[in-house]
Length: 556
Figure 1 (cartoon, rainbow, N blue to C red):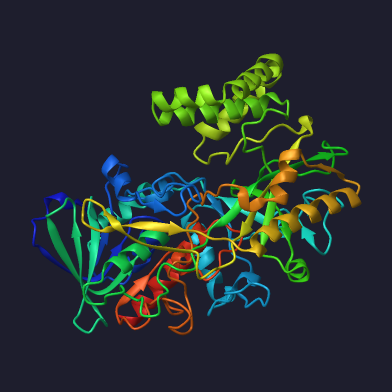
Figure 2: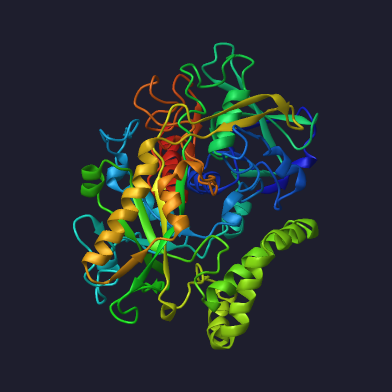
């Protein structure tokens, strides 16, 4: 059942077997699996069916130092469905090496292995409508060349790994009917969890205090509670619930909020191919189910160990900056639309400022479109149909091959650091009286070295293989020389603030995602990841939530 929690009278006590705090991929997939138990479940999604100004404000916080991280409300969505309402749909599992203790990556190692998650990853891929969980081009497309660029692959860089793309599936819409018809589920729209009330000994959650507006509290008394509201909010709720445990729930070893990770990503350099029209798999491919797939450049585990770097992938994309040096009409059209529409969404004043600040670059893009545009109008109509009017959406628009300008996008693992953390900002509270967050993200030498090494190895291999040449602009050279000077944006890949560990002195939750020393409290989502891999976290978030649901059913 899905209901409006604003109709719940203050002081009401709701009894349930399981209380789930959150409304995104982790919470919904957990609820879907737990429905089968027949036991009662209450979801507190932290918002309604739409993003609101008040919801955005609840996510505001502090970044220290200023500008070192995007504003905390920028990429996060506080509403029913969470970020599945806006995600691109990329589904990628972690690699076996991500779970291993790597001597060259401090803080690495999971208490579980990838083999324990195989079936859950397959189920997560199914729920996300991304087809079968086959991420190997050699088996998915057996009648096609295995390499992205024929003759490129070697023992350090390979291109058979695939990413799969969801529709993209909005979990709140796709699974609404199942949750609505489930007699043992109550989804309390517009409700926010504001406190975890512990028993006097601090070993059990007695109830979750929730409210739709300040001063109108009600309680959920559940046998088990799962917090699944994102890596930043999971940590915040644990830290802010400190009336019984002064340092916060699960924080007896000062580990809640620490080891905050994300991904370093961006575009550096561009490839020019000897023959872009031959032996080159550039565009998205469709498998037998019509699911979009794409190959990537992956630094193999052997190369990661040899060069003592983190996990990292790359793929040909388009420039993410506003520069028009590519001289390509399709790319310029994309940049104009993204820049102007993005500004328009932020209001007329912000749009005017963007146009003013970027007038020369925007004019350059407009001239390229006017000069070369007639040749792309046919392509634009085809791409627009696939991108915006089909149920399964084309993931992104790529510049045409004939331009022979292929920017290299990279996405790299962020090595876990104890001092990279989120903590409470004692100087500011939200409308419910909860302290806001202060984010202090940090990177180490291995993070920067990973990107430099990957770019260097890619350039070397591309040119040694005879496939093409790789070019770095002066801006690219400066970035590689001083990567620490460049701004960071998490892109909502928030990871690691309640890390999983075999023992309480090394993490916040155990291998079953139960908070150490708390009998009935669990955490779901990317906050439990000890390491971040190179992969977008959504698929692994869902897989671990499904695994947790199975554990809870067995435990109950």
